[in-house]
Figure 1 (tube, rainbow, N blue to C red):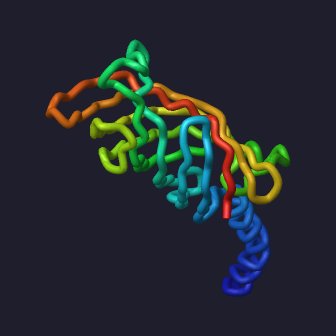
Figure 2: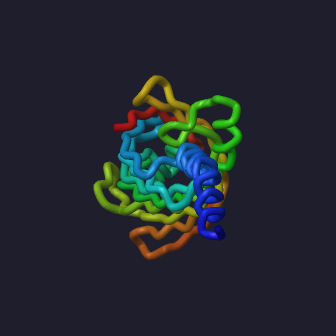
Amino acid sequence: MIKKRLFFSILTLLPFLLQAQQTSEVTSVKKSIFGVQFGTVGFWANNETKLSNTIALRSEIGFRITNIRLGNPIYRIGNEPFIPLELTLEPRYYYQIKKRYSQGLRIDNNTGYYLSLKIRHHAGWFMLSGSRPSNIEIIPSIAFRENIGKHFNYEIGGGMGYQHTFTSIEEEKEYWAFNIVLRIGYTF
């Protein structure tokens, strides 16, 4: 008798458990996304890997015009803009994914608002200028990603953080770093 009750209880609850599991998977960031993006100051290839239902780890490689800082004129001798190789790791927290899904808004390809901690390294390789500085930046940011059709997307947002620069003459400098996100991309 107890076995029958247990069996019927499980049979009755099974559809609800499956429904909850399917909703959880549907309201989750995508397992893995590959894409390319172009912005006002560079271009990047990226991958987002799912860490949890709302957190993805973005890894990125690209080139970005840099050396544009507050209080640091672009065209001062010995301080020209340069285009270094850029390596980035960025955990992203998509904090409204369940709310967007419940409102019938798109969440495919990790669409929505996100908070992130961008850790970016500008390597002193492949420079287009004579100097070979490199730096590391740590920038908390907030942004929005939206899809246009099935494969195209755009991102808008920004943040402010810390930058530590290592120059070729072994002189180290610290600056405020800004992350302005204005990008158009394609997801494969």
